[in-house]
Length: 618
Image 1: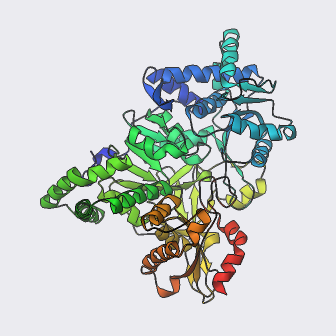
Image 2: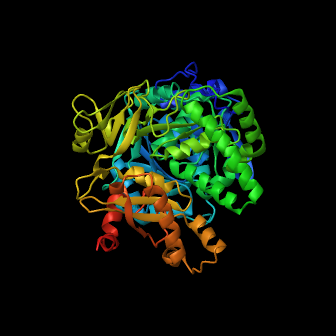
Image 3: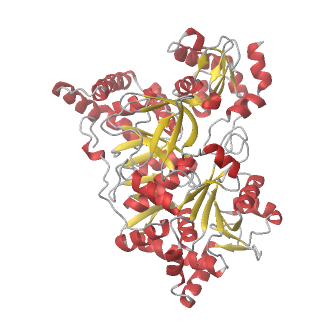
């Protein structure tokens, strides 16, 4: 069980070493070394199915040979259009083992986006999850002359399909078994032919400012970075991890699949994105990496449950979390925790806090990792008060994931930590922009040499677009994106992310976009948390017929105003939000306003809702 004053159990273990200079070399060496051990689990029809390293290797071998039987050659690109599942990992490793380039496509992308990504990447084989994803490919395949084959994971509903361009994953594996019998050495030759400098994967940016750009990562960069992760984050074969973020995003690809491939930590796949809260309680991960929105949802769930509990339970929670906060404050201040307070914390955990952790599913977690977006420092402190250290990492697609990270023994809420040992990080003296340099930095953008030259300067420094500050200990803090900084009509520089993070700490707010550039005061567009706000409405007899009427009700408007008032108290008068507008459309990842990682696109939101914004200033 984690204790806040003994952090030795979450120190990185750089003594873990797996040989190999390419991802397929790492994988095949790992499979040989760990053979019968369990690597992955996935819930199918209510039962958790295990995959050993040997079983994984067999499937990867068959899929690789199947690809070669289809004529898939070295350096060709295959794309994967699927939710996060074991089949995604098998196909990714098979493509790389065959000497190819692996590219992921968000399962929420529309058919037009699928066409663009396949076209831009030169995809010749497309893996799709099911009939829904297959439909997207079939709509646009006439515009993709290089696409030779579409491979379907789940053929339910497609049993009668007769299409020469479409094949099931099972049929591909059968094809591969026959090909392997005829060419027993070919896969080993392909793996050996993979060179460290070869392009390995494409990771397309989410396209918040135009068409997605394909970030190119070499085998050398991936292997170098995954070895670097081993000096940053503690993980080994005893750990249980939860794999649920999109694998086409750099966070889960590197921090989930490839890092667990390297360390041997077990990967547990959720059933689908909607079952994350249920599955995390079943899996009880020992190391849990997620984005801030997930941590916010867990916190919101606890707060809502607390409101529904009795007075005695509320009082017990108030006392217990107060004890936890006092312990956390001392740990953060690097001061000893007195024996009497340790005893109180032991009682608080036994009677209350352990139940809160079980409610979330983090009762076995040694520590938590947050990244991909800024998180409220108060949220970090809350998890620490529960007795679970939370470490923030920062990076981006172009840095192959994490470039900075909070050391376990020096947690600073609000900071992203010092530079990781495997790269350099500094501030541009003129603009305050965070710059990164190292072998982990990407090769450039596919087909976009001009964009690459804009992003990586002549000295090899990657311009991240994030603005930050650094303290005397070398800990960086993100203040905002360069393009998002607001300068009010009065000349005051405002960093909207600070206000937005405070608002998102509310259980009733999913996302927020603060407006105010060249304006007299600040306003905000808010996306409410549907589940929690509906619960509020039901508990308070607020009538509503649909999502739009819910956002327009006087009581809900007042509820959000109270949340804004709470946030405003933390900021100077000139930084306070004067008016707000609630989005009255229930958005999902399919909507243009949201990125695939469920973040509101600032510029698009400002443009699309300009009449509502102008109304707040009229």
